Image (cartoon, rainbow, N blue to C red; front, side):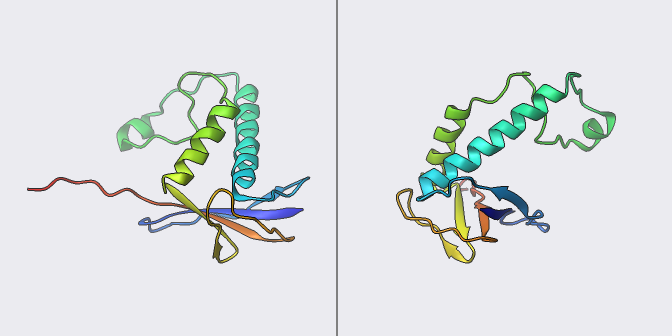
Length: 135
């Protein structure tokens, strides 16, 4: 079954990236299984990319000058741990750090059932935490 994933972050001008196709051999039955399968897929993809690049990447002059560093940099050179990543993602979902929409319907709690059809779009929205202080 092929579904598409898109990620959005509120408060950004360009708040959406292109849709990424994902193939599920066994479709998830609830939100917890959906998150676990997506995280497992991303961890394996990340670890494969890490194994393929044998050369350490250092900061470029452009990154230092602009003060912006990309997210794909692995500073410690270790592969990602899948179980820790899944636990972290599930906790983040419960804490409201991100929300999942299946087509245009919010997914609900971790035990909520998930019905995926062919060509379904999963939208992950990362919510920005506001911080500040009182004067």
